[in-house]
Length: 351
Image (cartoon, one colour):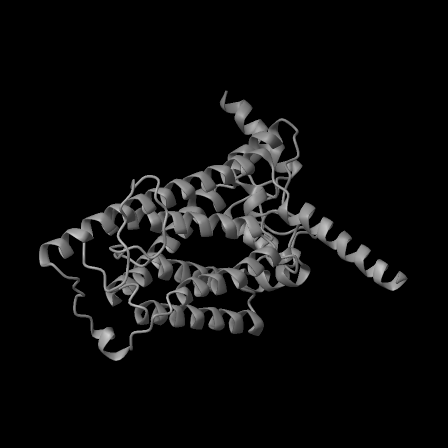
């Protein structure tokens, strides 16, 4: 019993440390995440509204023909019709479970959550513009039309909810989470392949149940990656490069993606992003002005001796006597007292 109690205490301590280290947020990041959740919720709500509108409009086709009609579909000829509609929802759960496990164990969990919700919300906004614009007859012979208020009716598997597949959208977005954030080892690659296999199998299940036409499934596979990489581009240039939302982007240290990253790798990443250790963009003018007024700027620690020697061999740089990195090194320019004095004298003479 004492051993079990000790293990439980260690596990609890690990969870508390991880929450403080990787999950703790400041006020700005909390406000941002609340806004992301609100935008996602609004987009999902109006997608449901437009799906209800599409359901009511698709009934006009049956009323005009006097019977239900399914459009010809190539995959319907090769995939038999099954009546196991619950399997489409089951595959949603099968995609959510490993994705949630990845988020919980990731070193930057809120970044994964933000990217997931923003991409899913953007794709839902696209679906709002497509689901009710062109009404098509539902491929299922036993679906139900929405009869109530389109703003207050919430139902699954309604008729006319066609272009494009919302279930497949979930499959693809969860797969993209794994391909972007899974560990870079054989375990991560194996789980990523497994998740993509689930996504493909789920897409075929959607077609086999006649929940969607093949074109609906294909459009989801086209639109979801577009939304994902659009958000990724915007995030890199307007969040990562600008040093914003640091507790989401770099919860432990600026430039650190994983707890196992070395200090050299973190510094190299800061150099590539043009960020100081506190997350502010690197500004050489501000460094010079700070040196003029006797303020010592917070700079990145020097790269390792091995990296410095390697760089000097490539660039032909001569190491400085003090052992600090040369101006040719991949590190932030260090302003010495002599540089500060020379700049001050030159500035005074021009005045």
